[in-house]
Image (cartoon, rainbow, N blue to C red):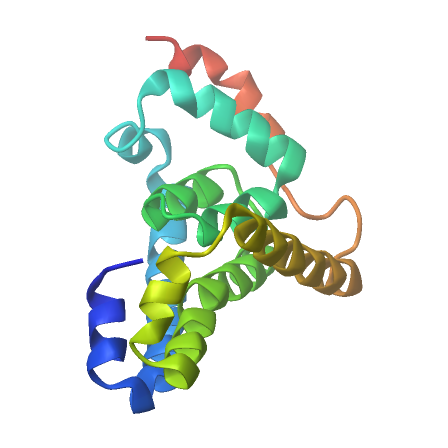
Length: 175
């Protein structure tokens, strides 16, 4: 977890929740730019960030999981720009992309900010010393909340639009 966000929140724990909100909003806005770039220029841009042999696998994940791929990607410490670019390229519906990004990035920044706000510098030690069961419990909790929110707001079959059209151009993905 050590990064600029963590350093700012530790330095000013009374502002940690505010920093978490700002980081969440900025990350999602940046994600929208990545989404637009991926949608407009697609494969030529994505090839700069992702080896070609992974792109087909990512297309399959986007086809099969759509919103879940975005949500999990927003939670993970992998570069979020990869998620945003591929979401645009594979035509994940924009409202779905935004919802998954907001929930995932809020967990990543806002929840951490709240934790630091209430526990101060001890939060870093607590997070670093968390047991694997604690991490599993947190992931399960976040996933359950995510599932409940997505079930409430998402209609089946409308998450991915156009990802299958990439299949037709999969010959372009060959090295």
